[in-house]
Length: 123
Image (cartoon, rainbow, N blue to C red):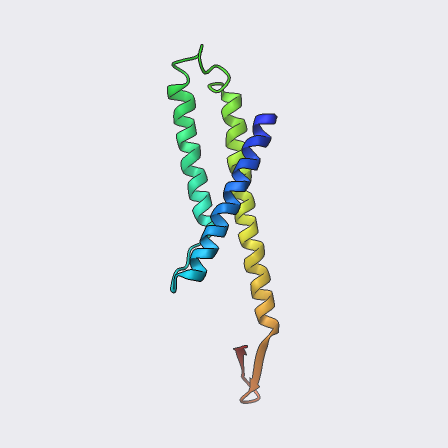
C-alpha cells in the first residue's frame, strides 16, 4: 500500500509539473495549444508499458536481486497509480473545460435581429 501511495503522489506531482509547463508554454508561445492532460496521459501510458517490460522481462530474470519489484502484485500497484493519476488528469480537464463553457455562456451579448433569430456574441 505504501508503494501505491508513493507512486500516486509522485504521479500527481508529475501531473502538476506537466500542467504548469503546458500552461506556461501556451501563455508564452503565440499559437501554441498544448493540452497538458493529454500529454500526461501519453506519458503515463508509455511509463506503464516500460514498467511492464521491466517487471516481466528484466526483473523476472533476476529474482534474487529484484524480488519485490518483479512480482505481479507490485506491478499492478504501480499500474493502479498510473491509471488513477491519468483518470484524475482527464477528470480535471473535463471539469475545467465544462466550467469554462458555462462561464462564457453567461457573458454573451444577445442582439435581436429578427423575431426568429438571435445573435450571441461573446464578450
